[in-house]
Amino acid sequence: MQETRPSPKPSGEVTPEGAGWLPHGYHLRSHSHLDGQLVYAAAGAFTTTTAYGTWIAPADRVTWTPPGFEHSHRFYGRTDARIVAVPVDECGQLAEHPCVFAVSPLLREGILALTGDRTRSADAARRLRAVVLDELGELPEQSFHLPEPRDDRLRAATDLLHADPGRNTTLAELGRAAGTSERTLSRLFHTDLGMSFHRWRTILRIHHALIRLTDGDSVTDTAITCGWSNPSTFIEAFTAVVGQTPGRYQAGLRDRGD
Image (cartoon, rainbow, N blue to C red; front, side, top):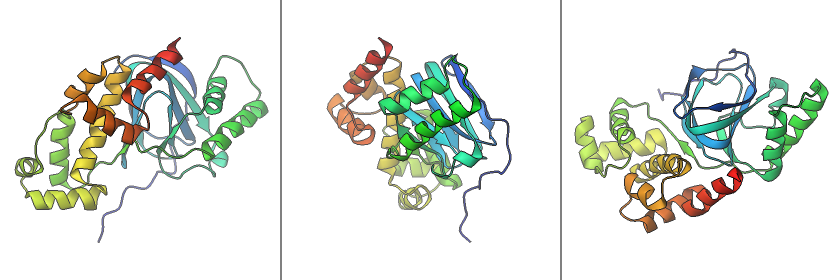
């Protein structure tokens, strides 16, 4: 029988909302909410982890977690975290699985308004939230999802890569460390994670690169630390996944800080 992913739980904690500055490395342990949740970093970056894997949300990305999903967050850099609770009866037009969306100017302003200091009536907040949800419905999901394995052999191999994303260990070497063959490990990446070993490691490295760029590391230092042999190959891979060059991404961070 094929193993299935855990289903979201029907119950959970009260969903927090609002804004606050969180320190680098701040970790919210695994929990769930009765409502859906949008989390946006107006500054900084964070990851959301569920049984389905990990999503990273650098600046100009927002994560969506449906009601009942067990999840945790880790924040990188000093993060201006904005959280919007979405009542269950308003979640119908959003995805039934966790995901990441790009933040358009309208979406950003809506989230900032909902999480700002101004007091609004329940009806006014619902109308503003409807604008945010309508805008989300027009935006494509972003490919920042890093799936996590269920197979113990594959988990042993990916744990080594998590510990040092820049290591250039071959698939054969990982297989020996995990007690299996290169061929079996290659098959497990495809069947368990839905992608090749090379693709999975590239996304893992992009996750770490986004965090380093957010912290202010140079493009060259980020490329070398995260395992690319030269900046040009890093820029090409980063652009293919993120949709913009690392230099443009950092420039956008500076623009939002002005």
